[in-house]
Each structure stands twice: as C-alpha cells, then as structure tokens.
Image 1 (cartoon, rainbow, N blue to C red):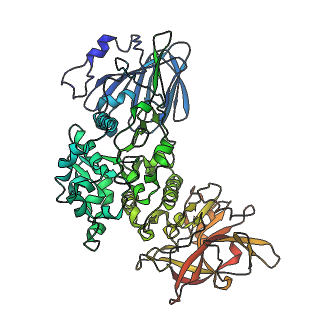
Image 2: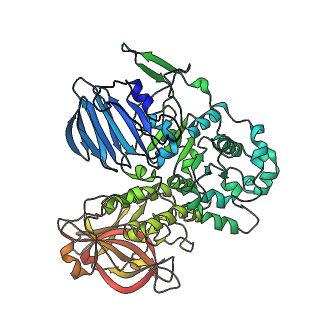
Image 3: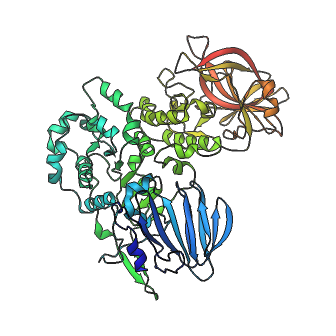
Length: 635
C-alpha cells in the first residue's frame, strides 16, 4: 500500500517528466482504508483509488469530464444515465461527461476501484489538495482541534488563506497603506482582462460612500470591507494583482453619470472573467466588515469506533439557504448577475464560509452540497449558460429563464428605473450564447414565452411613459410569475416580434373580443357567450379593471390538446414541437380537443392611433377573437 502512495505524484506541484509505475495495482487488494486516495496527479489527468465501504456508495453525481473506472475487488451496482449494471473485480465502466451516475456496494466486501480522468478547469484551479474531498456527495469531516494525522494533508491555498484571515480577523493598520495605494486610477481593464483579478460584492450603505475621491482621501472613511477584500487578495499565494470594487472603480458622482454608464455596460466582462468573487455576505454595509469569526462558538468531538476509525461531531452545521440565500445582500437586484456570471464565489457569512463553483457548494465543515439539475444547478455553471444549453429540450431553457427572472423580479433596488440596467450584464451574456437579440431581458428566441407573465403582488405598474415598456415583466415591481407547466402543446403566433424601428415596442396584429360579454368574478374577468357559457378568462395586472369597451388583445399562441403540426400550414403559425405551454394561473379551462388562445390584453394609449399598452393577460376561445388591424405597436 505504501508503495502505491510513493510511486505517483502526490504533491501540489507539476510532476516530473518520467514514467510512473504502479506494480500490480489492478490485481492486488489495497485496503487503504480511505474512501478516496489520489495516487497520481499529472499535468492534465489524475489517477485515484477508491474504497467504497459495505452499504456505501459513490454519490449520485454528474462530472464535466469522461471517467474510466476499473474495478479490482468486491461487487457493486453501477447506475449510469438511468441504466443499472452489476459490476465486479475485473470490470471496466466508462462514464461519459455530463452523465448522471452512482455506484453502490453489494455483498459483505468493500468495492475497490481505480479511476482515471482528465482534470477540468475547476480541478486545475483548486489544485490536487481540494480533490481529496471533491467527489463527496455529502460526507462531512471535521478536523480535530488538536490537529494531527486525521486532518487533511493540505488545503486549497486560496481557501486556506481566506480561512486564516477570516478566523483571525483583519488588522486595519496592516492593510491601510497598501489599500490606499494603487487606487489613483481605475483598474477596470486589468480586472476584466486578466484571470488574476477578483471582484467584490457587498451592500454599500450611506450616501457618502458614493464619492470615490472623498473615501480615498480619508483613511477613517475607508470602509472595513475594503480592508477585508485587500487582505484576502494579498494573502493569496501568489497574491492577486487586481481587485475590483464597484464603489471605488466606478465614478459615482461629478461626471454626469458618463463613467457609470460606460462601466455598467461592461459588468458582464468584469464578473465572468474574474478569478473569483469575494461576497461579504455577513456585512450589512461597507463598514460592517466580514473578516473574523468567534471560534469559541464552534464545538467538535472526535469519536473512535471498534475498528479504530474516527468520526467527528460538530456544532458547525452548514445552512446555506439561510446563511447565503436569505442574506440581506442576496435580496438586492444588482447582486444577482454577479452571482450568476461569477466563475467562483467565496461567501463570508456570519456562521462560516461557503465556496461556490460549477461543481457545487463546499461548506467550511467540508460538506458538499449539490443542487438538482434545475435552476440553481444551471446558474452555478462557471460558463453560464453553456451547461443549460446542453440540455436536449428548449423546455429546460425556458424553465431556467423563468426561474431567474422570477427571482430577479422579487429583489429590491433603490431606483426602480434601473431594473433593466442591473441585469444588463447577464442579458448580454445570454444574448451572446443564444445567438439572438434581446430587449429588456427578453431573449428574442423565447419572446413569446417571456410575454406570458402575471404579477404576484398588488403593486402599481411603472408608468408606461418610463423607459420600460408595459409588455415587459420588468415593468411590474413586486414580483412576477411565469408558467412552465408541460400539460399542453402550443403554436406560436409568428406575427408577434420586436419592432425593428423602436426598441421599446413590439410589432403585432390587433384583435378584438367578439360575441361575448365581460363579467368580473373576484380577480378574474370571465368571458361568456349569449348562452352564459364560459368562453375564456382575463386577469388584469392591477386591481382596477379597465373600461371593457376599450379592451383589445394580441394573440401570443394557440393551445390545444391535439396534434399541432397538422394545422401549421393552414394557420400560418410557427410550430415548436415538444415545447409545451402551461396554464396561466388557472386561466386555461379547455374542453378536450378545443383550441384556446393565449392573449395579451391591451388598451389604446393617448396620442397615437396605432399604439397600445398591456393591461393584463388571458385565455379565450378561438371563436371570441377576431383580427381587426395589422401591425400595431405595443409599448
């Protein structure tokens, strides 16, 4: 066993250019006693020995690289892409990149195997040391307070140095001289163009913090968060050369907002190309600071079983949802795009640190948290939205976009008119990858689905005279909801599109409600025919209903339970096979096989005969809608 460990490169440094020979590795029973032992780390690949205990498993995982697993002892059940296969000594299993897999022991002997795989970007960044616990699904290990052989041999240098500074707290005097130097000019180009740059994220606080020169000329005003960010960057080995702090790197006052407008447009580059984002999640403002933790509040206990194996119990329990998800900083609109675009983020919370990257969330107690292959898992992608676009169906993309936009719509922002700007970096990134135009965070490729939203609150709409058009979900503060149900097939109306001349407007054909009456019933407006039979339902964006005589509609899609494709040519509609449309807050009340139209409810604006604004959404029977005018503008 010792010979195996001595043969390969197990150091946090490049290997020698020489042969590595493991004599009898595939034929001997090793019994390292460790779940995972790194035998060799090369420049671009790694060989690992694993011993899965009786009744144990290699957690349900997805890796971004191919893996080759060679089983040398014991029996087990391999589940790859939903297919089960019994495995035993001598078998080889190949797990393709991006495939969900799990291995469970069978029988009374541990399952031993050797696995080889290419190191991806996250492994290269974290070095070999982090790989000691990289593949755990959720297996906490707590180092003893006394130290010793039970502790991990080494830690990620960045993670380790941050932990050291965070535990001990930062001495402001130690960093004052270095912090104030070097800020006489902006560093945006360097921060956005080099992998050695770091971004920062925290809540600003008072009005004075918006004045860059005033802050830099007064040491007493230099916020604690600035010292903390400088400390964590300087302590990294090698030191990080560039640090981006919005409130210092962007001129906040005195130039009529020119620098702010220029830099905000480049936020996508700043955060997506940053080496790492430091999130001062524990800080309530710039002066709160985020370094320093009360170690006395953490209690741990080591337990030894009859086989001389050690277990650790600790009060240091991870609570990512509350520590990070519900932290004050993550209620702010500006922060969301920073979190999604960042390759890696280190959250300094009140209780512990959390490392977040494309692989998952790693807690300070060495627990790994995984997310299901839905919204959060996609947004953790270090190259968002590449992982999302690898899914075989458009429905996954729509569901993720809806999840993102719903989250953003509920967040706080000081200036409501800044809502499109605070997400513009993320919008730019999505447009580049989706290869389509986007307006007000509505990708043209999914425009019809993004128009089907309803408010979740009772707030007032932003004035239609503002820069945000009424048809956009950003126009309604207080939260919106997109439906992503898969109960219905639907066809898109090809005559709804962005207006080529006016970026704030949609171009569409106008329809009128015919052969029906309107009746208010609670929050819904019911359409009925002459026999009082229900023919549809409308839901207004605000409580005050509009004058019924002025109501018109724009057909977005037709919904049916039957086959869509056989009607495409006759209806001149754009088909999207297997791309479902769901009920909008219970508005779809169709009989089997009966078509229904999903519509935007609109009314005329003042001053332009061809201009309309959105006031609600609805679902109505096809015989209650008739086209009355081509090419009107929805603003």
